[in-house]
Image 1 (cartoon, rainbow, N blue to C red):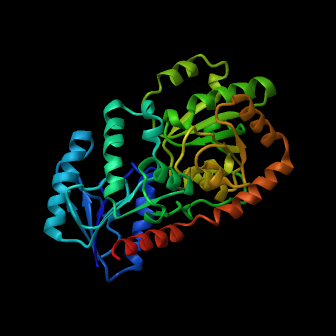
Image 2: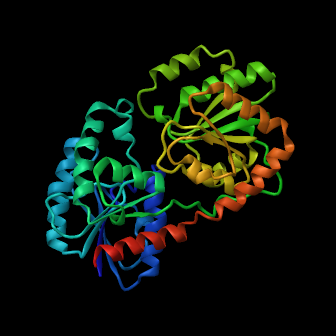
Length: 370
């Protein structure tokens, strides 16, 4: 078998949800199938860390696909040409983009349809491209993989795709996350207790709602807690910046930038809770990272988050900052509740492993060839 894979997003230091899914599933699939040939397609000089075995052949295609016009050129011309040249049995695209001009079996991993439901939260040209082409990709795909039952049902309803063409491949959680015996002291927060947010600074993550609920919590309780925000800045944050600049407790909000590996595990272990009350998620990887690190979680009652969190988190309305602030207060004042959430979270994290995700994605690949 010969599998060609779109790996254009694998860039050192730039891995977020989709990229981690790609890395963690592919390195297991490559290792578990040494007799299968893989061709990885990059749009720039690749890093050897992403060549997961001797059965992987990396191929660099031009142009670099980082703009809607270049996306079209890359997938419809460069990828099509590579498919014709290398003749794979199937094309796998972990970010959902396909080559519409190719007639071989293709698998699109469509993580969520945020761009359909919240078009105002993306740049106009990017959102327009997604809305136009992902409808075509969904119809063209031999099979679709996605990361939650919520997203599966959303794809079925939005694009009229039969249920039996879509496989749920839940995300996993890395073994680098674990509960530490001794809670670390975090210098970033001046050794004060803190709430943690992990994710892109994107409006759909409800960043302004996080700041508002933190303001309410601080004003009501007068506790010394900080809010530690971990993630890369994205776009359309003018309203958020304006609110932040006028916060009464602005000095207690710390933007820590991107954090990975042991550093991020330390931050989960040191936090009183993870604040993850987004407006929209196809899965929500920080929820299970926090669970595995023994960090209590406050999350939202919408989209995929209740499915992922189960009964192991405090679940709130993302639009009710008072209710979120109340959950923050409960989690720092009720020790029995904290212990219960930590124990349930650790157990729930065991449901989501990258080994299981890789096995499910492999099953999807096999089905696409039948």
